[in-house]
Length: 219
Image 1 (cartoon, rainbow, N blue to C red):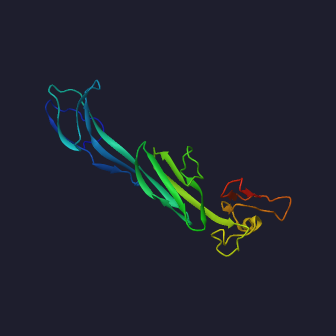
Image 2 (cartoon, rainbow, N blue to C red):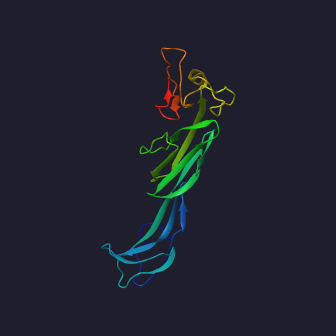
Image 3 (cartoon, helix red, strand yellow):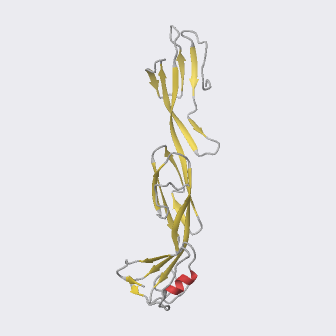
């Protein structure tokens, strides 16, 4: 107050109460701007004075001259991280100052594995990483998706829910028979002999991971 734009016909020395909201938010609740003060400039762009108030009484110069009042703002954006069934995110929502970095982490529940981030995923991050960091320049909504996590060990007894190597599937083929898109099959260190000498085809987006690395896991 007054509204954005020109205030004309101010007399020399005339007072003018000016103010701005301490905090402005958009209708969606995803952008917040906090007023951090003001700056006063002349027609040449020279800074004449400044302050941290959100309201004060301006006095027009004498003789009357052009003045430009700029309110200063710190803009923050809301970043949300929504968890699909099968896990959680942290933090689920945060306010981040424009240009600062946000970090979000997806944590799968028992018997589940993290699959990937979807929605507003920046091109600078790896969507399949459970923890990602990125600069924020706009409101963002991320969605963490999770998938099944299956265990395989030659000594597994295939006891539901097969949440450990002791109760996992004894063969790779059995795990692949139940795994669906995005699932991860964890292989305990061992040599696995396939029933089909021609090998196996993994075509449904399932990941096979040897927990001890390729040197200790042979299929």
